Image (cartoon, rainbow, N blue to C red; front, side):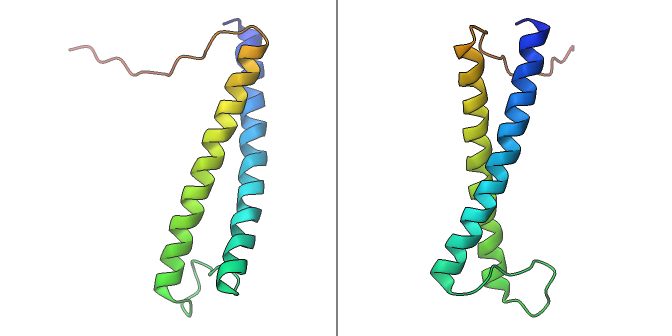
Length: 96
């Protein structure tokens, strides 16, 4: 993969990831409000119910993780559509 293609891929996936994170957060907040009838709990609010705070943390973490995977896949498809090679995962090599 050429350096220019690698840079375009990284910038494109970063922008797609940021946009996906913002959209996912809005969707998750709206979904939580629709289902529970309340705003999502603030993690630093001592008055918030611990169960709902934990459920919100789990739901938002799962939703944002899915959004990041989708953004990475969009970036890879964009790279491949431009004739680039599939990015290889970074592996840490250990010498023994």
